[in-house]
Amino acid sequence: MTEKLEPQLTQGRPEGSGWLHELVCKRPEMPYLAPFMVYLALMSCQSFVEDPKYTLHFYALRTVGGLAVAYRFRRYYPPWGKLHPVKCLVFGVVVAYGWVMIHRLVAGQYAGGEWLSERQSWYFQPLGADADPEDFFDPKTVYGTGFTYWLFLLVRIGGASTTVPIVEELFWRAFLLRALIDWDDFEEVPLGKFTWGSFLICSLLSAAEHPQWEVGILCWFVYNALFYWTRSILCLVVTHGITNFVLYVHVVLREDWVFWS
Image (cartoon, rainbow, N blue to C red; front, top):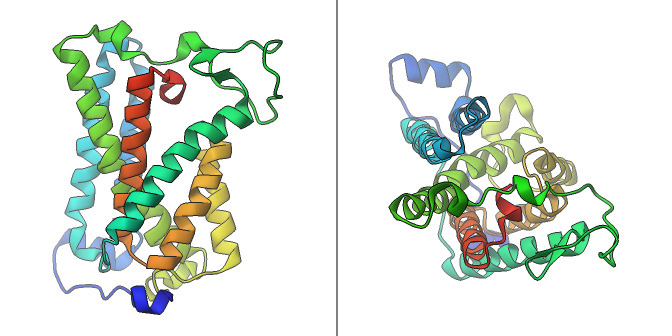
């Protein structure tokens, strides 16, 4: 079935010159690592500023920064593949729904938008706890409900739906899944090649990136499986973007700030 949906894709490096081309020739992983690492570095800068009103600025900075680096390396990516719009929509919405519901079930910290104390909760919290409710980032308490609030929502949801899927899918699916099969010659590994080791390790490593790590692992199981099925980076970018968009719209409409801690 996979062969009919998308041929196995490998990367043929384009010809070129200049420092960037020389860098890619020496370090072929850089087009995949650089956007992700720049995004994480810019995100970490926020920890040095205590005033929450600058959160908007840092989100805008890492959104533009990560996307700009990915664009700079655009010539060195393999073909992005087909869109598969139905799969993108179905998997994107299902993963977003599962992210909320599974975290509620496993964490057992809140239900119906209300915080539950340890004694009130009838289910046990086995995998660690969410942040305290006072630590959740509620943009209304920082920006009010005027223009700046809506600008923040535009930047945060827009960045989560565009830059985040691009930099993460390039790193996790286009690079790491292949590098875990053949680290020294990952470019020769076809996109979507399956091994149990790369599948499990990549999924487990996602725990280091997501605060709700128990759901992050399950999410990566689904995304990896979809990638094996379609062998399309574009499909995963769009699916990931739909997941983030639906999840963040839920956060805003239900004021479920546990996902914005």
